[in-house]
Image (cartoon, rainbow over the protein chains, first blue to last red):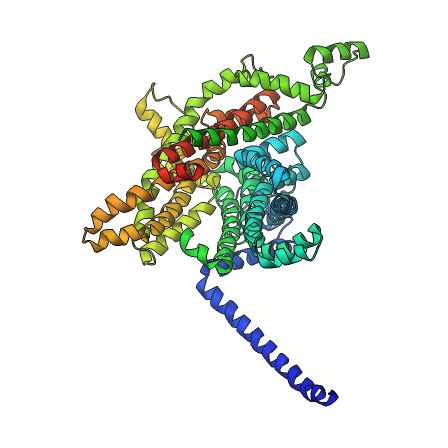
Length: 307
Length: 318
């Protein structure tokens, strides 16, 4: 009995290695094919990688101190010394854009992560428990969704006072219902699968069923939601800042730069054009990534939704 | 139909409840202690005076009681009085409402007039260059920040070409021509994102309709393409588009806040941002509640309209 096993072992190991590398190659090729078929996916990723790299490398790549005024060059148009021009205090716009990206992207990402944690938890509870608790949670989500996102964010940051923390809380609260709804909807679709029934029949505890059997099947749909939410969160953050209710100075963020620069539209339009373009790119990047992910992960949706 | 209306109304009640609780809770977070807010930091009032004031204002009662009391006033349209000006919140909102209504309705009409034909065109030639181009533009326009677009429009049309005013408002009754001039740029600014989503949605719905059996039957029996489109496809395809209006109305109001601020339109949106700046609590509370309840009621009306036009929806609810 021992011999065949010994004989088979190397063979089995060999094929598993071979198939693993073949599989890896196929998967890599699959990704290349996906990227070619989904231009949105790679355009979105490319934009985001560039923006995130710019923000992370700001201390190395920024040519000037983003907060240091230099009145001798105030309100200059883009030139070789200042690629994006200067603002009314003579601060270098390129450096401010690079540092501003840190704040804008950080606030958006934080808000989405918090919104995701709360929203997914509520969705899991709602989708698993059903009944009264489900109705309670979902009607609350409906109520929050009825508020225009910007108006809700504005009221929350008004209630909590102007600070980085309150802006993040406000943006996170706006994102919660989206996650809860998506997760609950998908759980209802998964409920009657055999493996869920099997796990329940085996007497697995609810927490284990939800985390081990439901959650892994929700990852892709959550990923899409994260990407689309990040686009909306950055957009709302910029809107708040543009209206003057964002993260208080002195740290620059793109919406705040637009807010400050807008006053000088006639003298130096670049102060409005450039920060707005970066907000647009960030939102576009996340939306493209989200749409591309959805089309890749759920091809049936592709035709229905357009593009 | 009556049963459908009944069910739909029942669904609206908990949503309205959540909205009022959320608004009330948020604003009671701001107040902290309204008595101290009224007296100011340098007040030397003794504890007895403070307690008496508390009782007068009714803030010594538990929050649920205060909520019930507040709700009773709100239901009758009494939103309280502004901290900063002598008028009531309701008067202030009503005075600003016509501008916001004009802006949102104009944007909605413009969006429908532009987006529906584009969506149909893209669906009829789905997969073609035209379709790809339109869909691409639609999804880019969805990411375009409205405030940035507004600023760019002001720069080009008001500052460079000097053909349209950059900010301000003249009532339609005063001068229709001036009114239209002031509304052109804000309307474009607010309508653009809506055009994007409406085009996408119309396209998706039309593609689905065009694949239905009854369309194939109509084609097979030799009807002309235009007849198939007009009599069979559009009649069924455009009804679901109505629901988008219900879904987008919240975004429309949020967009109006930003748009009114850019173009200094004296609407409810600027009233909200001004009140937040002035920390005018009753005003903020009233406006937020007003906007959100309007959103809920609009989507209610849209849903009822949808059921009225499409018997299939009604039968779903039996």
